[in-house]
Length: 394
Image 1 (cartoon, rainbow, N blue to C red):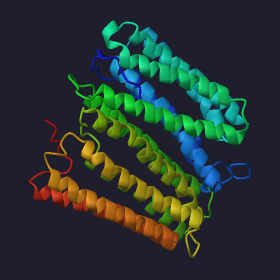
Image 2 (cartoon, rainbow, N blue to C red; image 1 turned 90 degrees about the vertical axis):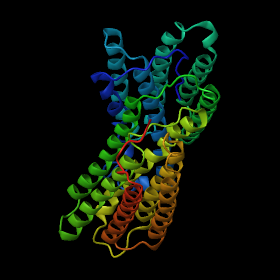
Image 3 (cartoon, rainbow, N blue to C red; image 1 turned 180 degrees about the vertical axis):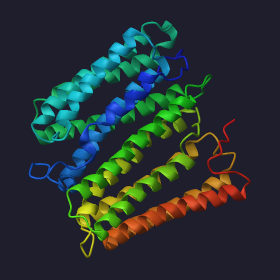
Image 4 (cartoon, helix red, strand yellow; image 1 turned 45 degrees about the vertical axis):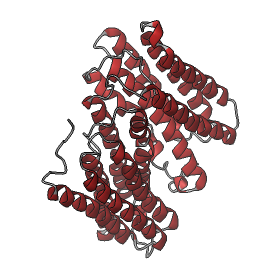
Protein backbone atom coordinates (compact mmCIF):
# COMPACT_ATOMS: atom_id res chain seq x y z
CA UNK A 1 0.00 0.00 0.00
CA UNK A 2 1.49 3.28 -1.08
CA UNK A 3 0.70 5.46 1.89
CA UNK A 4 0.24 9.07 0.75
CA UNK A 5 1.66 11.98 2.70
CA UNK A 6 -0.56 13.25 5.47
CA UNK A 7 -1.42 16.41 3.54
CA UNK A 8 -2.41 14.52 0.39
CA UNK A 9 -5.18 16.30 -1.52
CA UNK A 10 -8.23 14.49 -2.82
CA UNK A 11 -8.29 14.62 -6.58
CA UNK A 12 -10.35 13.35 -9.45
CA UNK A 13 -9.00 11.39 -12.37
CA UNK A 14 -7.76 12.62 -15.70
CA UNK A 15 -8.12 10.70 -18.94
CA UNK A 16 -4.50 9.57 -18.85
CA UNK A 17 -4.93 8.41 -15.26
CA UNK A 18 -7.94 6.28 -16.25
CA UNK A 19 -5.82 4.51 -18.84
CA UNK A 20 -3.07 3.57 -16.38
CA UNK A 21 -4.65 0.55 -14.65
CA UNK A 22 -5.39 -1.25 -17.92
CA UNK A 23 -1.80 -1.02 -19.02
CA UNK A 24 -0.61 -2.66 -15.82
CA UNK A 25 -2.74 -5.74 -16.24
CA UNK A 26 -2.09 -6.39 -19.90
CA UNK A 27 0.80 -8.84 -19.24
CA UNK A 28 -0.62 -12.24 -20.12
CA UNK A 29 0.04 -13.88 -16.78
CA UNK A 30 -3.65 -14.62 -16.49
CA UNK A 31 -3.92 -17.39 -19.03
CA UNK A 32 -1.88 -20.35 -20.28
CA UNK A 33 0.66 -20.00 -23.05
CA UNK A 34 0.39 -21.22 -26.59
CA UNK A 35 0.67 -24.92 -27.51
CA UNK A 36 4.04 -26.44 -27.98
CA UNK A 37 6.07 -24.23 -25.70
CA UNK A 38 7.14 -24.62 -22.10
CA UNK A 39 3.86 -22.96 -21.14
CA UNK A 40 1.59 -25.14 -23.23
CA UNK A 41 -2.10 -25.06 -22.44
CA UNK A 42 -2.76 -26.58 -19.09
CA UNK A 43 0.68 -25.65 -17.78
CA UNK A 44 -0.99 -23.16 -15.48
CA UNK A 45 -2.96 -26.01 -13.97
CA UNK A 46 0.01 -27.45 -12.09
CA UNK A 47 1.27 -26.55 -8.64
CA UNK A 48 4.27 -24.73 -10.11
CA UNK A 49 2.13 -22.98 -12.73
CA UNK A 50 -0.38 -21.94 -10.09
CA UNK A 51 2.36 -20.62 -7.81
CA UNK A 52 3.94 -18.68 -10.66
CA UNK A 53 0.59 -17.21 -11.62
CA UNK A 54 -0.19 -16.13 -8.05
CA UNK A 55 3.23 -14.59 -7.44
CA UNK A 56 3.46 -12.69 -10.73
CA UNK A 57 -0.12 -11.52 -10.40
CA UNK A 58 0.78 -10.23 -6.94
CA UNK A 59 3.69 -8.27 -8.41
CA UNK A 60 1.44 -6.75 -11.06
CA UNK A 61 -1.20 -5.87 -8.49
CA UNK A 62 1.35 -4.14 -6.24
CA UNK A 63 2.58 -2.06 -9.17
CA UNK A 64 -0.99 -1.21 -10.16
CA UNK A 65 -1.86 -0.21 -6.60
CA UNK A 66 1.12 2.12 -6.32
CA UNK A 67 0.45 3.80 -9.64
CA UNK A 68 -3.27 4.06 -9.00
CA UNK A 69 -2.95 5.65 -5.58
CA UNK A 70 -0.30 8.10 -6.68
CA UNK A 71 -2.18 9.36 -9.71
CA UNK A 72 -5.44 9.37 -7.79
CA UNK A 73 -4.06 11.55 -5.01
CA UNK A 74 -1.31 13.58 -6.64
CA UNK A 75 -1.60 13.30 -10.42
CA UNK A 76 -1.66 16.44 -12.54
CA UNK A 77 -2.61 17.21 -16.13
CA UNK A 78 0.86 18.49 -16.98
CA UNK A 79 3.82 17.48 -19.10
CA UNK A 80 5.77 16.01 -16.18
CA UNK A 81 2.95 13.67 -15.16
CA UNK A 82 2.27 12.59 -18.73
CA UNK A 83 5.96 11.92 -19.31
CA UNK A 84 6.13 9.69 -16.23
CA UNK A 85 3.04 7.80 -17.40
CA UNK A 86 4.69 7.28 -20.80
CA UNK A 87 7.86 5.87 -19.22
CA UNK A 88 5.82 3.54 -17.03
CA UNK A 89 3.82 2.33 -20.01
CA UNK A 90 7.04 1.62 -21.88
CA UNK A 91 8.34 -0.41 -18.93
CA UNK A 92 5.05 -2.28 -18.62
CA UNK A 93 5.04 -3.08 -22.34
CA UNK A 94 8.49 -4.61 -21.98
CA UNK A 95 7.36 -6.54 -18.90
CA UNK A 96 4.46 -7.99 -20.90
CA UNK A 97 6.98 -9.60 -23.25
CA UNK A 98 8.70 -11.52 -20.45
CA UNK A 99 5.89 -12.21 -17.99
CA UNK A 100 4.53 -15.24 -19.89
CA UNK A 101 7.70 -17.20 -19.08
CA UNK A 102 8.47 -15.59 -15.74
CA UNK A 103 9.39 -18.95 -14.16
CA UNK A 104 12.22 -19.42 -16.67
CA UNK A 105 15.13 -17.36 -17.95
CA UNK A 106 12.79 -14.51 -18.87
CA UNK A 107 12.30 -14.00 -15.14
CA UNK A 108 15.75 -12.39 -14.94
CA UNK A 109 14.76 -9.59 -17.29
CA UNK A 110 11.35 -9.27 -15.67
CA UNK A 111 12.96 -8.83 -12.24
CA UNK A 112 15.24 -6.09 -13.56
CA UNK A 113 12.38 -4.26 -15.28
CA UNK A 114 10.21 -4.53 -12.19
CA UNK A 115 13.01 -3.08 -10.03
CA UNK A 116 13.24 -0.11 -12.40
CA UNK A 117 9.47 0.35 -12.24
CA UNK A 118 9.53 0.31 -8.42
CA UNK A 119 12.36 2.83 -8.45
CA UNK A 120 10.35 5.12 -10.71
CA UNK A 121 7.28 4.80 -8.47
CA UNK A 122 9.48 5.52 -5.44
CA UNK A 123 10.78 8.65 -7.14
CA UNK A 124 7.23 9.84 -7.71
CA UNK A 125 6.32 9.41 -4.07
CA UNK A 126 9.56 11.10 -3.01
CA UNK A 127 8.66 14.20 -5.07
CA UNK A 128 5.53 14.53 -2.91
CA UNK A 129 7.28 13.55 0.34
CA UNK A 130 9.92 16.29 0.07
CA UNK A 131 7.20 18.96 -0.18
CA UNK A 132 5.37 17.77 2.93
CA UNK A 133 5.74 19.39 6.33
CA UNK A 134 8.56 17.82 8.41
CA UNK A 135 6.24 16.79 11.26
CA UNK A 136 4.03 14.88 8.82
CA UNK A 137 6.73 12.86 7.10
CA UNK A 138 6.94 9.89 9.47
CA UNK A 139 4.46 7.58 7.70
CA UNK A 140 5.54 8.49 4.14
CA UNK A 141 9.17 7.92 5.16
CA UNK A 142 8.34 4.39 6.30
CA UNK A 143 6.61 3.72 3.02
CA UNK A 144 9.55 4.97 0.98
CA UNK A 145 11.93 2.75 2.94
CA UNK A 146 9.78 -0.29 2.16
CA UNK A 147 9.70 0.68 -1.51
CA UNK A 148 13.45 1.06 -1.70
CA UNK A 149 13.93 -2.30 0.00
CA UNK A 150 11.64 -3.73 -2.69
CA UNK A 151 13.84 -2.26 -5.42
CA UNK A 152 16.91 -3.93 -3.91
CA UNK A 153 15.16 -7.27 -3.40
CA UNK A 154 13.81 -7.45 -6.95
CA UNK A 155 17.13 -6.42 -8.46
CA UNK A 156 18.98 -8.98 -6.32
CA UNK A 157 16.60 -11.74 -7.47
CA UNK A 158 17.54 -11.34 -11.13
CA UNK A 159 20.72 -13.51 -11.14
CA UNK A 160 19.17 -16.28 -8.99
CA UNK A 161 17.94 -19.61 -10.30
CA UNK A 162 14.33 -19.79 -11.47
CA UNK A 163 13.13 -21.60 -8.34
CA UNK A 164 15.01 -19.34 -5.93
CA UNK A 165 13.82 -16.25 -7.79
CA UNK A 166 10.19 -17.36 -7.55
CA UNK A 167 10.59 -17.90 -3.80
CA UNK A 168 12.11 -14.42 -3.37
CA UNK A 169 9.24 -12.89 -5.33
CA UNK A 170 6.68 -14.73 -3.22
CA UNK A 171 8.31 -13.53 0.00
CA UNK A 172 8.40 -9.99 -1.39
CA UNK A 173 4.68 -9.99 -2.30
CA UNK A 174 3.65 -11.32 1.11
CA UNK A 175 6.07 -9.17 3.11
CA UNK A 176 5.35 -5.97 1.19
CA UNK A 177 1.61 -6.43 1.57
CA UNK A 178 1.89 -7.25 5.29
CA UNK A 179 4.22 -4.35 6.14
CA UNK A 180 2.25 -1.78 4.16
CA UNK A 181 -0.95 -3.10 5.72
CA UNK A 182 0.46 -2.51 9.20
CA UNK A 183 1.69 0.95 8.23
CA UNK A 184 -1.76 1.81 6.90
CA UNK A 185 -3.51 0.54 10.04
CA UNK A 186 -1.34 2.66 12.34
CA UNK A 187 -1.55 5.68 10.04
CA UNK A 188 -5.37 5.61 10.00
CA UNK A 189 -6.01 4.60 13.63
CA UNK A 190 -7.86 7.86 14.29
CA UNK A 191 -8.36 9.53 10.89
CA UNK A 192 -9.00 13.26 10.96
CA UNK A 193 -9.59 13.56 7.21
CA UNK A 194 -10.73 11.29 4.39
CA UNK A 195 -8.38 9.81 1.79
CA UNK A 196 -10.84 7.60 -0.13
CA UNK A 197 -12.73 9.20 -2.98
CA UNK A 198 -15.50 7.86 -5.18
CA UNK A 199 -13.04 7.94 -8.06
CA UNK A 200 -10.65 5.66 -6.14
CA UNK A 201 -13.46 3.18 -5.50
CA UNK A 202 -14.25 3.33 -9.20
CA UNK A 203 -10.63 2.52 -10.00
CA UNK A 204 -10.81 -0.73 -8.03
CA UNK A 205 -14.01 -1.62 -9.84
CA UNK A 206 -12.36 -0.89 -13.18
CA UNK A 207 -9.51 -3.21 -12.26
CA UNK A 208 -12.02 -6.02 -11.70
CA UNK A 209 -13.58 -5.26 -15.10
CA UNK A 210 -10.15 -5.44 -16.72
CA UNK A 211 -9.49 -8.80 -15.07
CA UNK A 212 -12.90 -10.02 -16.24
CA UNK A 213 -11.63 -9.41 -19.75
CA UNK A 214 -9.42 -12.45 -19.20
CA UNK A 215 -12.60 -14.55 -18.87
CA UNK A 216 -13.74 -13.35 -22.28
CA UNK A 217 -10.29 -13.96 -23.77
CA UNK A 218 -10.17 -17.44 -22.22
CA UNK A 219 -13.50 -18.41 -23.78
CA UNK A 220 -12.55 -16.95 -27.16
CA UNK A 221 -9.17 -18.71 -27.13
CA UNK A 222 -10.82 -21.99 -26.19
CA UNK A 223 -13.39 -21.71 -28.99
CA UNK A 224 -10.72 -20.67 -31.48
CA UNK A 225 -8.44 -23.65 -30.78
CA UNK A 226 -11.17 -26.29 -30.47
CA UNK A 227 -13.35 -28.00 -33.04
CA UNK A 228 -16.58 -26.16 -32.52
CA UNK A 229 -19.90 -27.91 -32.00
CA UNK A 230 -23.08 -27.47 -30.00
CA UNK A 231 -21.58 -28.77 -26.73
CA UNK A 232 -18.38 -26.76 -27.09
CA UNK A 233 -20.21 -23.53 -27.92
CA UNK A 234 -22.74 -24.06 -25.12
CA UNK A 235 -19.96 -24.68 -22.61
CA UNK A 236 -18.11 -21.56 -23.75
CA UNK A 237 -21.19 -19.37 -23.42
CA UNK A 238 -21.95 -20.78 -19.98
CA UNK A 239 -18.36 -20.07 -18.96
CA UNK A 240 -18.72 -16.51 -20.20
CA UNK A 241 -21.91 -16.16 -18.16
CA UNK A 242 -19.96 -17.26 -15.06
CA UNK A 243 -17.77 -14.20 -15.61
CA UNK A 244 -20.85 -12.00 -15.67
CA UNK A 245 -21.96 -13.70 -12.44
CA UNK A 246 -18.68 -12.57 -10.87
CA UNK A 247 -19.35 -9.00 -11.95
CA UNK A 248 -22.99 -8.84 -10.89
CA UNK A 249 -22.16 -9.93 -7.35
CA UNK A 250 -19.15 -7.63 -7.03
CA UNK A 251 -20.83 -4.64 -8.71
CA UNK A 252 -23.92 -4.65 -6.52
CA UNK A 253 -22.39 -5.76 -3.22
CA UNK A 254 -18.99 -4.03 -3.20
CA UNK A 255 -18.42 -1.68 -6.12
CA UNK A 256 -19.43 1.97 -5.78
CA UNK A 257 -19.67 1.63 -1.98
CA UNK A 258 -17.12 3.61 0.04
CA UNK A 259 -15.02 1.74 2.61
CA UNK A 260 -14.56 2.91 6.18
CA UNK A 261 -11.68 5.33 6.68
CA UNK A 262 -10.48 3.60 9.88
CA UNK A 263 -7.16 1.76 9.44
CA UNK A 264 -8.08 -1.94 9.71
CA UNK A 265 -11.19 -1.55 7.54
CA UNK A 266 -9.40 0.44 4.86
CA UNK A 267 -6.51 -2.03 4.85
CA UNK A 268 -8.94 -4.94 4.51
CA UNK A 269 -10.78 -3.25 1.66
CA UNK A 270 -7.58 -2.54 -0.25
CA UNK A 271 -5.64 -5.75 0.23
CA UNK A 272 -8.50 -8.25 -0.01
CA UNK A 273 -9.03 -6.95 -3.53
CA UNK A 274 -5.81 -8.74 -4.50
CA UNK A 275 -7.02 -12.34 -3.92
CA UNK A 276 -10.46 -11.38 -5.24
CA UNK A 277 -9.10 -10.11 -8.55
CA UNK A 278 -6.66 -13.02 -8.66
CA UNK A 279 -9.56 -15.47 -8.38
CA UNK A 280 -11.37 -13.81 -11.28
CA UNK A 281 -8.21 -13.91 -13.40
CA UNK A 282 -7.63 -17.58 -12.53
CA UNK A 283 -11.18 -18.36 -13.68
CA UNK A 284 -10.29 -16.71 -16.97
CA UNK A 285 -7.34 -19.07 -17.33
CA UNK A 286 -9.59 -22.02 -16.49
CA UNK A 287 -12.00 -21.08 -19.29
CA UNK A 288 -9.56 -22.35 -21.89
CA UNK A 289 -9.50 -25.85 -20.41
CA UNK A 290 -13.25 -25.69 -19.79
CA UNK A 291 -13.92 -25.17 -23.49
CA UNK A 292 -11.18 -27.44 -24.86
CA UNK A 293 -12.42 -30.43 -22.81
CA UNK A 294 -16.10 -29.61 -23.31
CA UNK A 295 -16.88 -32.99 -24.88
CA UNK A 296 -15.30 -35.02 -22.06
CA UNK A 297 -17.60 -37.05 -19.82
CA UNK A 298 -16.08 -35.51 -16.68
CA UNK A 299 -14.21 -32.32 -16.02
CA UNK A 300 -10.44 -32.82 -15.65
CA UNK A 301 -9.50 -32.51 -11.98
CA UNK A 302 -7.25 -29.49 -12.49
CA UNK A 303 -9.89 -27.55 -14.43
CA UNK A 304 -12.64 -28.54 -12.01
CA UNK A 305 -10.73 -27.45 -8.92
CA UNK A 306 -9.54 -24.25 -10.60
CA UNK A 307 -13.06 -23.21 -11.59
CA UNK A 308 -14.71 -24.27 -8.33
CA UNK A 309 -11.88 -22.80 -6.28
CA UNK A 310 -11.96 -19.50 -8.16
CA UNK A 311 -15.68 -19.07 -7.54
CA UNK A 312 -15.24 -20.02 -3.87
CA UNK A 313 -12.38 -17.55 -3.34
CA UNK A 314 -14.33 -14.79 -5.06
CA UNK A 315 -17.32 -15.39 -2.79
CA UNK A 316 -15.28 -15.67 0.42
CA UNK A 317 -13.27 -12.53 -0.30
CA UNK A 318 -16.56 -10.70 -0.87
CA UNK A 319 -17.68 -11.93 2.57
CA UNK A 320 -14.52 -10.44 4.08
CA UNK A 321 -14.92 -7.16 2.18
CA UNK A 322 -18.49 -6.41 3.26
CA UNK A 323 -17.75 -5.47 6.93
CA UNK A 324 -15.16 -2.98 5.66
CA UNK A 325 -17.85 -0.96 3.88
CA UNK A 326 -19.06 2.34 5.29
CA UNK A 327 -22.74 1.36 5.24
CA UNK A 328 -22.32 -2.11 6.79
CA UNK A 329 -23.48 -0.96 10.22
CA UNK A 330 -26.51 0.79 8.75
CA UNK A 331 -27.88 -2.51 7.43
CA UNK A 332 -26.29 -5.25 9.55
CA UNK A 333 -29.10 -7.79 9.16
CA UNK A 334 -29.03 -7.46 5.38
CA UNK A 335 -25.29 -7.88 5.14
CA UNK A 336 -24.98 -10.77 7.61
CA UNK A 337 -27.67 -12.78 5.84
CA UNK A 338 -25.97 -12.19 2.49
CA UNK A 339 -22.63 -13.21 3.99
CA UNK A 340 -24.16 -16.50 5.12
CA UNK A 341 -25.50 -17.10 1.60
CA UNK A 342 -22.10 -16.36 0.07
CA UNK A 343 -20.33 -18.79 2.41
CA UNK A 344 -22.88 -21.50 1.58
CA UNK A 345 -22.39 -20.92 -2.13
CA UNK A 346 -18.59 -21.04 -1.72
CA UNK A 347 -18.82 -24.44 -0.02
CA UNK A 348 -21.09 -25.66 -2.83
CA UNK A 349 -18.59 -24.41 -5.44
CA UNK A 350 -15.81 -26.42 -3.79
CA UNK A 351 -18.09 -29.46 -3.70
CA UNK A 352 -18.66 -29.11 -7.44
CA UNK A 353 -14.91 -28.96 -7.95
CA UNK A 354 -14.59 -32.22 -6.06
CA UNK A 355 -17.49 -33.99 -7.85
CA UNK A 356 -16.16 -33.07 -11.34
CA UNK A 357 -19.38 -33.21 -13.39
CA UNK A 358 -19.45 -32.76 -17.16
CA UNK A 359 -17.92 -29.45 -18.13
CA UNK A 360 -21.10 -27.83 -19.39
CA UNK A 361 -22.85 -28.94 -16.21
CA UNK A 362 -20.02 -27.58 -14.04
CA UNK A 363 -20.28 -24.19 -15.76
CA UNK A 364 -24.06 -24.21 -15.45
CA UNK A 365 -24.01 -25.09 -11.74
CA UNK A 366 -21.40 -22.43 -10.95
CA UNK A 367 -23.47 -19.89 -12.87
CA UNK A 368 -26.59 -20.88 -10.92
CA UNK A 369 -24.71 -20.50 -7.63
CA UNK A 370 -23.60 -16.98 -8.54
CA UNK A 371 -27.07 -16.12 -9.79
CA UNK A 372 -28.65 -17.48 -6.62
CA UNK A 373 -26.43 -15.36 -4.36
CA UNK A 374 -27.27 -12.25 -6.37
CA UNK A 375 -31.02 -12.98 -6.33
CA UNK A 376 -30.90 -13.62 -2.59
CA UNK A 377 -29.10 -10.30 -2.01
CA UNK A 378 -31.55 -8.50 -4.32
CA UNK A 379 -34.56 -9.89 -2.42
CA UNK A 380 -33.03 -9.09 0.99
CA UNK A 381 -32.34 -5.49 -0.02
CA UNK A 382 -35.83 -5.19 -1.49
CA UNK A 383 -37.33 -6.46 1.78
CA UNK A 384 -35.59 -3.56 3.50
CA UNK A 385 -37.12 -1.06 1.11
CA UNK A 386 -33.87 -0.62 -0.85
CA UNK A 387 -32.51 -1.51 -4.24
CA UNK A 388 -29.32 -3.55 -4.17
CA UNK A 389 -27.51 -1.10 -6.45
CA UNK A 390 -28.74 1.92 -4.49
CA UNK A 391 -25.96 3.77 -2.78
CA UNK A 392 -26.53 4.39 0.90
CA UNK A 393 -23.26 6.16 1.76
CA UNK A 394 -23.76 9.28 3.84
